[in-house]
Length: 230
Image (cartoon, rainbow, N blue to C red; front, side, top):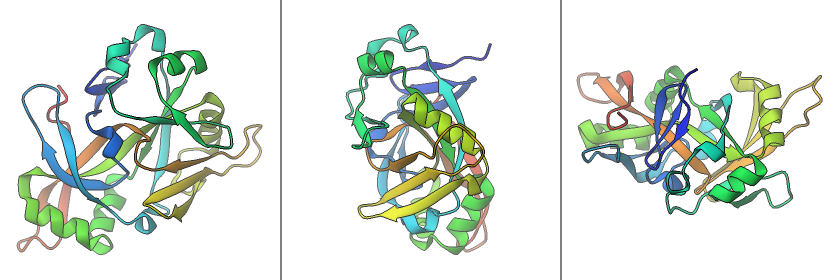
């Protein structure tokens, strides 16, 4: 069975590792300078976020992770950051804690912008992020994957909607918030909505520019950045 584990600095799912440090600052397509000290404490110092309107139609639900929270250590699960999880109540979110994760049996859901659409977006729409990455150089990163915490009913709704990009309806809200609604038919699971905002990211993964054109105005290749997760 592949490893799934929550650590203080990393989240491991099916043997793949994701960053957790400074996750409270992270949104989908946050960009900035990667801080990479020795050990597994790498993180992103956020400079800015790609405009939410540009992300509409590009974010895709991938999978849901069932976590046996009783097998995780409280000191690993709770990093000290003020994180939130998505609820089915009218308020939409509640404060995340180790005890709450165990009692409610919270799940983790993975959302991505695939590498191809990410590169196209940076080259053609997200000029501010493109210029930053060109100027920052080797330490420039952009967030391409996030994990969020949610109640099981919401997780079931997103799973029922499917993994294609079109399965999500996106709406931009004030304050750099992106509202995602799982849209599906012919399923007992009803539509569910979450609002991605600061404090809702549990773990994340970043991309770096692997190859520029000659004058660094166009990205030719992107790479997933896993350095600092081992």
